[in-house]
Image 1 (cartoon, rainbow, N blue to C red):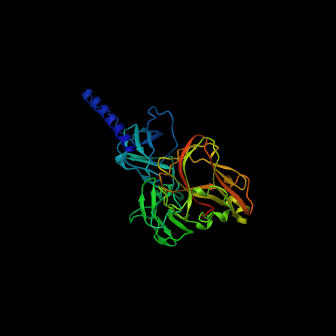
Image 2: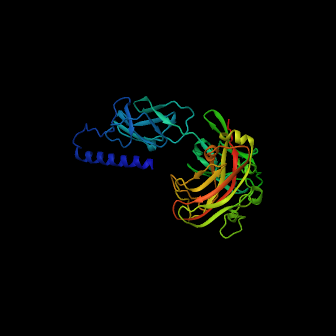
Image 3: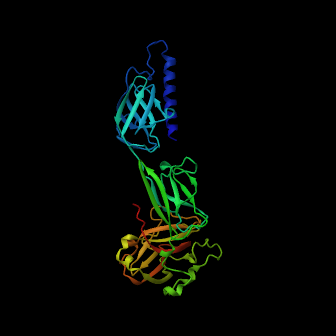
Length: 391
């Protein structure tokens, strides 16, 4: 898309120049705007569409199109930003201006310098490029079944050496065994879970950040953190909602990930109070004493035609130890898993609005729609999981 900007600018300017040349061919000294007479000089850097050069900039991001204003900028031979070369095929330059995109390449060294060279000399100006850091948050579905392909939630994987070919410099592994990356784009990466992958393990991502080797780990199927075994509702004092528990054998039930789960399907009246599974469990003393070190997690699945509603302070209510937390995933953007399981990760301190205590505590799931709702939503593997510390 950025190259289209350059081509459009170039086409317009060249046509303009050609038209002028047709008219003034009698003037042997005519300057078509591409003639330089000395070393290049940059008076300012601007966004490409700041045609009047009114708002100079001092920094940009990858793929941003910029415009240099100055003199003697034509006949460009080389441009680098942080010592990363800009392909000359993506540059349009006149004597008084040059247009090009910031390369989408992680520099070996951040110099914050822009180097510009022509046939008649060179110049260097201070200019900062924002270098994005790799983001690895979690698996889209932390309880993905062995042998399946699962998305890694994050950004900028390709910039840090992850890839599907032999030229990849970064790796993904489980218990020391390499995992296959089966899909990679600028914004997406998925990996294949090994057929023999054990529960309660970590997936390790290894890559280089400059000259530093970095490892980061994310959890996979932490079954030991699950607080309700829904195959034994009586063990958790369930007094409501057991009719919503399914083993996955019902009509249109999502595929089970780890035993039975909760499925709520049907129509519910505005502001009606609906008890989903309600019971309790024994809370570990370390969790009660250090809730900030833990996350409240579960997997969720919405049928394709039933995204989650923007529920305000109602909707799905999680009552933990006498407190109440309204889970509203569509508050900002509509949330729909389109029939796939997705992991939800919340700060335990936000869910436990009235604090925690060790021993037996109550946990109730309530549905109170803020308008008439038609839902088909499933919840699985409710758990309290210790945060992974990546050093």
